[in-house]
Amino acid sequence: MAHFEKAKNLNEWLDQRLAINTLKRVLNTEYWIPKDINFLWAMGMVLAATFGILVLSGIFLLMYYKPDTNLAFDSVNYTIMSEVGYGWLWRHIHGVGASIVFLIIYIHMFTGIYYGSYKKGRELIWLSGMALFVAFSAEAFSGYMLPWGQMSYWAGMVITNLFSGGSLEAYGLVEWIRGDYVPGDAFLTRFFMLHVFLIPLVIIGLIVLHFGTLRIPHVNNQEGAEIDFKEAADLWKSGKKKESKVIPFSPVFLSKDVFVMGVYFILFFYLVFYNFNFAMDPVNFDPADGLKTPAHIYPEWYFLWSYEILRPFGKDAGLIAFGIAQLALFFLPFIDRSPNVAPAHKRGLFQVWFWVLLVDMIVLTAMGKLPPTDPTFAWIGLVSAWTFLALGPILFIITMFEKKIEKGA
Amino acid sequence: MQEKEKGRRDFMGMALGACAAVGGVGALYAAKRTWDPLPSVKAAGFTTIDLSGAQENVLVVEKWRGKPIFVLKKSEDMQADDRDIVIGTARYHVSIGLCTHLGCIPAYEKEQHKFKCACHGGEFDASGHQIFGPPPSPLEIPPFKIDGTKLVLGETGPEYQKMLDAGLTV
Image 1: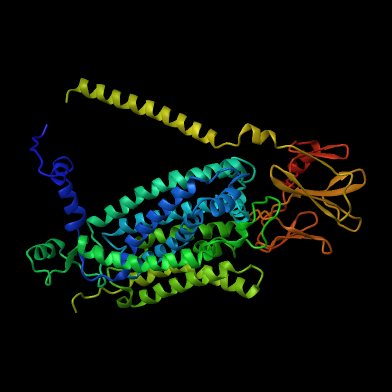
Image 2: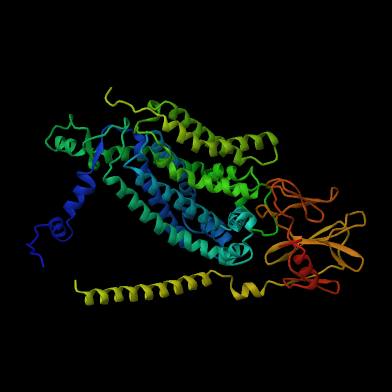
């Protein structure tokens, strides 16, 4: 066993046993962040904080929620909303958080795309981030089931039907996933398990991995400049803070993160207290009824773009297009052939591509919300779905011809 | 490393691998079975519907295995179809009332004799054939057995077997 001195204080006592001073250095005070990054880089910490808030509010909801098809609806809409002291607060925080977390995820993703933060050396950051996006999607979907309203039931019906594989008609698989012929008790309890235990566990693991992938390639910066982190860190440590291109994560960069979070939480709690309804679908205030479909089934806003890619095609083609839409963004680091790590506005055609992608996804989102009956909108939906599918090959081609940008010019 | 020792280590490695594989497959099978529908769910999978009270061109919706079942007594002027269930002189269209696209419930439009699904605009005629929109196949016919004027859903009778063999439903 190692030799232990008598510790003078708690910090020293812990340091001898846990090396907390080393940990603090590696994770905080000597984890170097480039100076040249804007508020968009704070979205990671905003997401971590929102996830924390979702976990906390979820714990309070969990204490009164009942995962039983006969009791679930009332346990949410009556017990939690009317009886439990401040139950409404946890529910609104949870509902608003679940919706707004996707807005921040999308901003975080598009920031990464705009600045080329997924490129060589940073592929794992992108891949672990996309895995987190999928895990958050599964978490959101399983949570949406739990109040057992009409939209919960029919969303469960439609999404599990996707697993029949179109013309493969694998209804045995669908019934296995549901544990019943239709979404029922078995379905509700297993989605409850997924929502409160298994998927959160996966998310926490992925967050740790996502942070870990950042440690060696370091975060990107506004100019995509390659920084000699060792040299820059030495400058900072020797007191030449102005000349150094980096700052320590804690406390210097963290103070900026905290400021952005402060602004964000003003918006967040404004929504929680004054505008929570935007995250609540009115159809979900009717109890689930297996013999009545709502007139128009649509998912929450953050899934509308991929739902609209599924919709305008036939059953099999729609399923394939939907699958491609879910997975396409994973391959971004490998489709983009350009040698440049640079913001989109310095990359010529890539900038056009970026804005077309962003606008196309907004158009898909808008069309996905509309009923499918209007032929003009259905046509716009079809065109934008094809546009999305075409953007992958287009990116491959335009980045193949992208010229290397001379740095420092 | 000596030959003898290497052989012994390889054997230990393979024995460990084999035990782990058997245990892993066993655990996977147990996990799969845990997610299967419960026996009580399966046992509740039969429903008897009395057809004698049905009125022509009026859609009756029954429930079987939690799913809506369409029962439509056809009138004289409605076209006969191989998928009709014939009892005496009466013809019935019986199907699972879930659109074969994504599983929403279509509504019956009495005057036009067709089913229309609001979700993605799919349409079916009074015999359940898809006539418009994304549905890839006709409305499905549940397994049935004719028992006088009654229909037992969940049991495969000779009439249903014939439809199945002819590929009229899945």
